[in-house]
Amino acid sequence: MAEKFDFDQALDQLRSGQNLTGQDGVLTPLIKQLTEAALNAELDAHLKDADKPNRKNGRTRKTVKSAAGAFELNTPRDRDGSFEPKLVKKN
Image 1 (cartoon, rainbow, N blue to C red):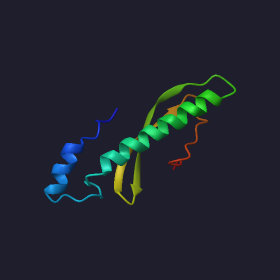
Image 2 (cartoon, rainbow, N blue to C red):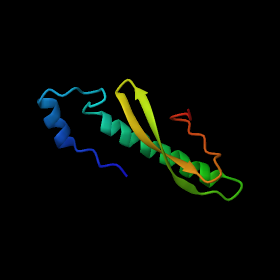
Image 3 (cartoon, rainbow, N blue to C red):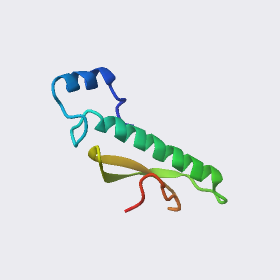
Image 4 (tube, helix red, strand yellow):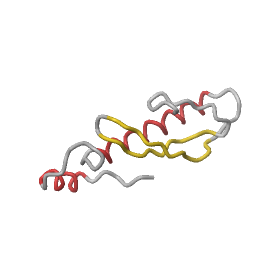
């Protein structure tokens, strides 16, 4: 799991002139953390609604380009490969 977003550190970075968005932007780690949490919730809902037995099966790295900048996500996957995230589509 990724580090928790440190608001005090973010404020210090903003005060020192670091960009709000972009690859090394102050908000990029928070956006990554929120996106990964949403993907995990999507997988949990998918597994709960599955008709046949299925379970979590690790993570896959994926680079995402957004208005906040590019960042790498650790997207969850399921054993039988039927999970299709809605928030961040495959490929």
